Image (tube, rainbow, N blue to C red; front, side, top):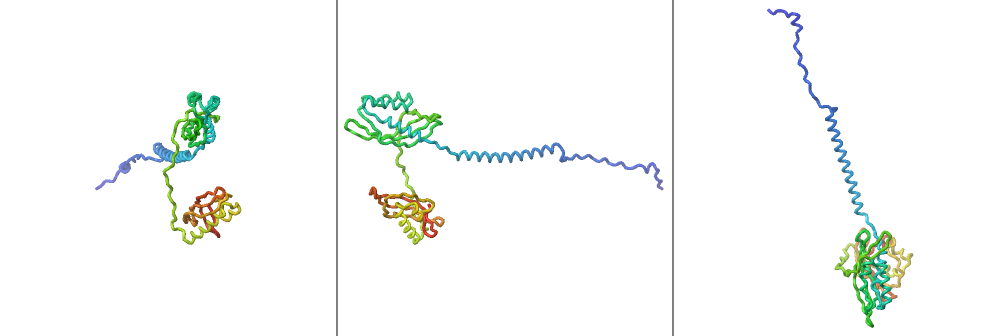
Length: 303
């Protein structure tokens, strides 16, 4: 027989287990905040570098496109005057002294001394410049230029005359005020020769119908017959946008030589040689044209 619990026993309760503390990583922890800041900073830096790289690339392209035009007019004029003084002499003492004096305006003192023996007092020839060709003027450094030129001289010795041609290279210095002096003596050089080049011949590509080609040919014959003497007002019946200038020459039209037609974007492109007789010289004048025509009501040259 079970005995009833005493009050003391009733008051005894089982012990509650203590809750275990669980560590959690929250948004407010310093380490997490640091990682977020690092991530955002990296992303911002990447975007900045990307835009910076694009900007730098753009500036680089602009530097390539920019070009500087150098005015070489003064250099060419200075060179031509030097050539006339340098390659002209008369076999007389006073004339030779005048030549030497002129050269002081072009040569450095060192070159003046170097050229003392070029034309001796007992030289048997006289020389005059017949023609000058400036082939190139190139910039070597900030203030230094090189010039290549050819000169034709007429050499007289007694009663005999002859022509001689030669090409030379010189170097000039130009100061901040634009003054020039030759620092390298005329040195034999090679002159430009005929280039071994043949342009591609244009041919009709059957894009223009025969009827249209005949119509355009008739228009061109009419136009080029009146073109040499046509006034600006008369040209407006044939030409748009000042595509061809007023020439006002006494030419007589003869024929069109080998016209070539191609249709491009509802226009007709024409390559043609026009044969004229020059009434002033009585010589044949062959003019080559590359023009574009279009038709609204009548045919017009638009380019």
